Image (cartoon, rainbow over the protein chains, first blue to last red):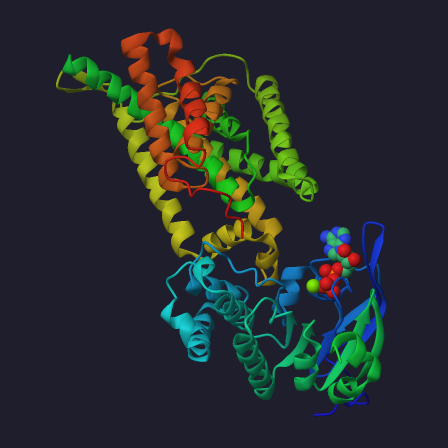
Length: 244
Length: 291
Ligand SMILES: Nc1ncnc2c1ncn2[C@@H]1O[C@H](COP(=O)(O)OP(=O)(O)O)[C@@H](O)[C@H]1O
Ligand SMILES: [Mg+2]
C-alpha cells in the first residue's frame, strides 16, 4: 500500500519539526516524519541516534521542546501519556519492560487497562491464540519467561489496547536469530491484518525488508527517507547500517 | 503463670494489630511508589484526634468516626498533591525526607487546631472485660483484631483481584510501562496516599479507646509500624500483619517479664536484628526486583 499524501484524511501520524531535550542535551533536531494508515514504517539508526527518544516523545513519556505531533488530525502536544494510549497509540518499549512479578495474564489484562472490561476478556483469548506459549504460561510471573517470550508478551500487552498505531522499539534486541525471525514474522502478520506500525530497529536489514517506507536517523536528525527497498539498495545505508 | 502469660499476649496482640495497620499503610504507599511515608503514624493520630474533637463538638460517635476518617483521607490526598507530586522527579530518598517534614507539620497542625491533651475515646461496646483462663480481654481488643482482619481482607482482595489494585502494583513495578498501557500514574500515587490515610485513621480510631490519643501519638506508632513492615518484608501484606503482631507481642512480653522501661526499645532491637540478618524481612522477596 503506497501512502497517499493527498488523501482527504491526511496521514495517521504527522510529526513536524520535532525537537526533544534532556536538560541541555538536544536529542532530536527538528524531526519531520509521517505515517499513513496501514503502513509499516521503519526507523533505523545507530546506538544513541535518538530512536527511543522519538518513540518516548510520541507516547508522551518525554516532553517535546519544539514542533508538533498530530495523530488522526489531533494535536497531541498537551495530551498526557495515558490519554495517548486511550486514543490509539500503543508502544512496545525497548527492553520489553514487562511487569516482572505479575502473572502473564495480569500483564495482558493491564495492556487492556483503557478498554471496557468485557472486551478485555475477548481480546485476551485472541492474544492467547496468537501467542500459544503465553496461554501455557499465563499464571507464571512474567519475569520468569525467556527473552523471546517476554517480547511476545510485551507485544501482546501493547495489542490489548487495540492500537491504531503500534510503536515497536527494537523488538529483536538481544534475541537469538530464530526468535528474531519469529518476531519479524509476527510483525509482518500484524501489518497484513491492517495494523499501522512504526518499527524502530538497529537491525536495519530485517526492518527495511518488511517496511513500506523507512527513515534513517543520525544524531537526532532524519538524514534519509525512502521506500524500504530503495533504502536497502542505498550505498550510504549499506555502508553504515548493513555492514556491506 | 498462665493467666499472666495470656494477659501479656492479649495486650501484645491488641497493640500488634494496630502496628499491623500502620505497617499495611507503609506497604501500600511503598507498593505504589517505593516511597516510605513517615507521616503514616500521623494518619493514625489524626483519625483518633479528629474523632475525639468531633465527638466533643456534639456529633454521635459513628458519624464522628466516619467524618474523622474522611478528613484524614482528605489530608492524605492533599499531602500527596502538595508535597509528593511536585517532587515526583526527585529521588525516592528526597520524597522520604519530604514525608518526614510532612509528619512534623501535621503534628504541629494537630497541636494548634486541636490540642495538646491526652484523650481516650469511649470503647465501642462497653468496657466489661471478658475473663479467659484468668486473664482479662477488653471487648475493644476484639474490635481492634476484627477490624484489622476485615481491613486486611479488603486490601488483599483489592490488590489481587481488582483492575485498579493491579494498576497500582504495576505502577510500582514499572512506572514507565504503566504509563505506556494508559495508567495515570499520578492519580495512582494520590490514591495510594488516600488509601493509606484511610487505613491509618481507622487504626487510630480502633486503638484510641485502649491507648489514649494525643498529638504526638503518631511518632511511636509510626516507628513501630515501620519496624513491623521491615520485619514482615516491606510491601508484603501478610508480612505487615505478621510483623505487627510479632512486634506487639514481643513488646508486651518484654514489658511484662523484663521491665516496662525497655518496652519501646524492643521494637528497635528487632529492626536492627532484621536489618543485619535478613534485610528483606520474613516474607519479603530478597534483592531488589524492580524490573
Ligand atoms: N534520560 C536521559 N537523560 C539524558 N540523556 C539521554 C537520556 N536518554 C537518552 N539520552 C541521550 O539521548 C541520545 C539519544 O538516545 P536514545 O534515544 O536512547 O537513542 P537510541 O534509542 O537511538 O539508541 C543519546 O545521546 C543518549 O545519551
Ligand atoms: Mg533505543
